[in-house]
Structure formats: C-alpha cells, structure tokens
Amino acid sequence: MKQFPLISIVTVNYKQAQTTNELINSLLKVSWQNWELIVVDNNSGTSDTDKLRTDLPNIQIIKSDKNLGFAGGNNLGIARAKGDYILLLNNDTEVEVGFLEPMINWMIHNPKTGAVSPKIKFFYQQDTLQYAGFTKMNPFTLRMQGIGYGKKDIGQYEVTKPTEFAHGCAMMVSRKVIDKVGPMNEKYFLYYEEHDWSLRIKQAGFDIYYIPESVVWHKESVSVSKNSTLKTYFMNRNRILFMKLNLSITQQAIATLYLIFISLPRNIFKYFITKELNHLSAYLDAIIWNMNHKTKAKWNL
Image (cartoon, rainbow, N blue to C red; front, side):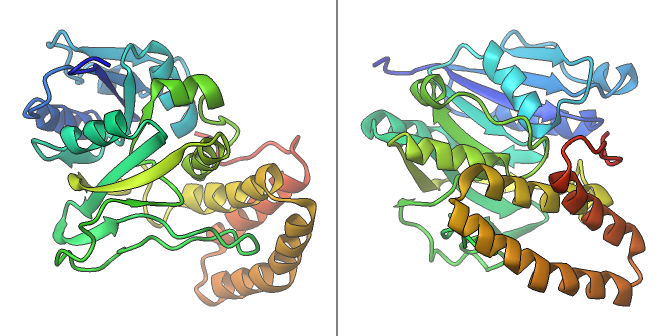
C-alpha cells in the first residue's frame, strides 16, 4: 500500500460554476497533497462551463454532451479517475483542511471497509448536523432516518461507527469496491442511487462507516430547489424503483399495499390542501413511470 495513495475527487456541475469554483478554492487548502479533481459538467452550456477553473494541473473538466444526472455524471468521472480511492463530493460543499486524512486512514487500515462518509453539517447553519450516519431502511415505507439530522452538534456523534448507508453528498469508495460491484445504477438519474450503491457494497461483503473526524459543509439544494417538482418526481419515482430492484417479492407486495392504501391517499390529500397541484402531478407521474417504463417522463432536464 502506498503511504500517500492518490485520491480522485469527483464532482458534478450543472449550471453552478460559481458554486463549483467555491468548492475548488476550498479543496486547494486541504493538507493531503496527493489528489486530483475531476469536474463533470452535465451539459450546462458554454456560458457556465467557461467560468469553471481550469488553471491547475490536478483539475480536469469533462464536458458531457447531455445531462446524465447525478449517477451518470459521477460514473463518467469515476471512469476517468486514476486514484486508489474515489471521493464523490457534491459541488455545493466546502471542506475542512484535514478532512481527507481521517477517511483515507480508516480505509487503509480497515480493508473490509468499502465506503465511508464524513460528518456533514449545514453550511449556512454551521452548528447544525445534516448527517451522522443512516438508520436501516424500513422495507415497507422505503424510508430511513438521518442520524443527527437537524440537531445541534454538541459532540454527541464523535465515534466512528458502521452505518447502513453512505451519503451521496460526500462518499469515499475504494477502487477494489468499484471493480467488484460496478458503478452507480444510472436508472435512478437523481436520488436513491447512493442508497442502491451502498446496499450493493454491503451485499458484496464490505462495511460502510461514518467518520466524524472528517467534516464537510453542505450548502444543500443548490442544483435542485427544496420545493422543486423535479425533486418530488425523482424522489418518489426512485423510491419505488429501489423497491423493485432490491426487495424480495413479499416485501414488494407489502410496500405496494402501503403505497396504495396509505402513501397515495395521504399525498393526494396533502397536495390538494396545500394547493400544490404541480407537485401532485409530479407525484402521480412518478407512480405512472413505474407502472409503465415506456412512459416518457416530462421532468427530464
């Protein structure tokens, strides 16, 4: 094992050159010296991509001729990466100076570890946690809990622990894991792809850990608005897709009953009461897509 292995950092840009450059400026201060950055531009257009920093030898810009989504964009970067370890890092993050060492050192000394994620805190509420691990996913509601989410960070999550899922905002994997389980499933396009990938990593015999000594600051929802119909569509579409790809027949049957008799009427009622009919349309389209894969989704970018 090399004493200072190369870390390939992959980030995806979509019409957020200024935000991506802020990440780059943050990375230039890190203490780990052996790293490369691969910025995958998801067809933002020249007015945006021309603003990306290209003045450093360890930064590559890959321009995709179409929007590949989060999974496809990261896969394009992974295919170009030369590192022994690959860190997927959202472009709307900034990092602490020594954030790489705790993750890479853990992976070097714990070879059964397939993926790690750092402590993630909100950039605009710097005393507040976004991620300190995930609980198990409920196989019927297809939801999990973010450990620490929204809580003030008072040092209560300072122990390195196994976690059910890594966080796609900041997720380091080893080259051997990618060689064994393959890249992310691009069917997801946006949301749930890291949960699917985490599950495949664990099924391949690897562990996933939360590393609190490493800290990343997340600006959250820069590329996709919190109240976006795009998010409503893909979150619900991919929750069902995850069920189809990963659950047993019995679990799928129970989850489908939950969807039909609880989730569907509850969401229809909610969107009617709040008069968010555009979100109701996105929600129903997500269900229809899963009923008929040939149905063309109108929420594509």
